[in-house]
Length: 107
Image 1 (cartoon, rainbow, N blue to C red):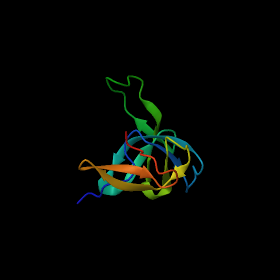
Image 2 (cartoon, rainbow, N blue to C red):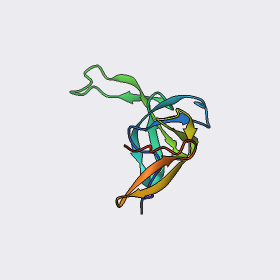
Image 3 (cartoon, helix red, strand yellow):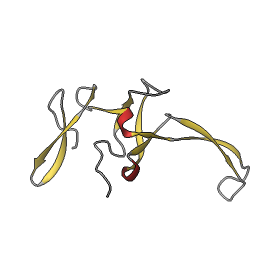
């Protein structure tokens, strides 16, 4: 069973642990089954590719790897600080709320 993550695709996050500690970026992809996310320009890795229709040249390309969701903190769009997210129900929908400023993260 997949867990629900407090971080979603499109959120801005700050890396708080690992070799890329301190970097900020947007979440490109979320993998809830494995509790991992892909953040732009974080955990960069090189991958050897064969020539294909999309990449005619082939060769070594650099792409983002996954990092565990516990190694990032959600950035609040209102106060701009890294924060934990609380959940609150509004009209039957769960929305995320900043623990620092109390404003809604989800619009």
